[in-house]
Image (cartoon, rainbow, N blue to C red; front, side, top):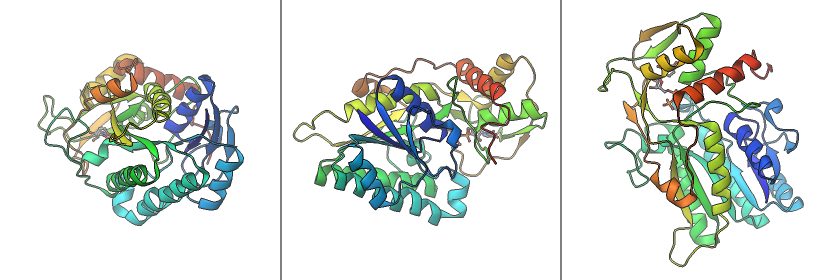
Length: 332
Ligand code: UDP
């Protein structure tokens, strides 16, 4: 298959591009490197350093290269930033996203896989979260992802676009070549590893949640398992739509297992073989106590099974990648 990956220079995008190439697909990467890294794009992929939000050039790229499918990983994805500056999120994730959809429509690309997020659910009343759990995002990031999922649905109904939105839970770990290098870094596991490297304590955001050890529980999924799901979703989005069937699917990607912040911390100490310097601070605004996926639907629809579900594998791979890449990808 000839596949365009937006955001292919980012954390999830780079590992997914690697997976698609290994499966024998031809890959084009579109990334403006505003948050990604050119060094994270495998050399076997054709790389355009540009935005996905420019309809005319993207249409040309799709037509000139006979692209058959799009994996749309690019987005603004920081919750706090989205609350401070929602305009940026609506412009990139919604307006830019629709420009990409229009380019796809003009170029006749009918397969679309979208990086969505558990943030579309907000603070769900039930756990585990199934795809029919009501959507109620509590920040502009989740809201813009929900809005784009809606666009996919109506593009499917009206124009025949076959799409799958993958609602990621907490992505973690690294492949041998590609890992997580964000600035600023907000995620738990890289912050733990950063504290070990620097000796500066990381902050544990709250230990008074209604959970067994008082810290929030999350469903962590290895980035390489996520990449496997992308490959399977791109294949599944090629199946003809049965009459009356929903052209736009939404699937949770998690393992169905929940781990608390303290469990992650103690697993990291075991993997690293030393203490993680940390302090306990107040809760971070907008953090739900428990987010755990029901991953059944992705198993049924895609035949996907997470194979690297242990915290030790996720933390261990992230740790190895960081040790091999001190300073990350080394860009300013
Ligand atoms: N967390 C923390 N300290 C950090 C980063 C995260 O205690 O430096 C906690 C956070 O409050 C949440 C969990 O770790 O309960 C996972 O946070 P992360 O930002 O990795 O992912 P999120 O679940 O917010 O998408």
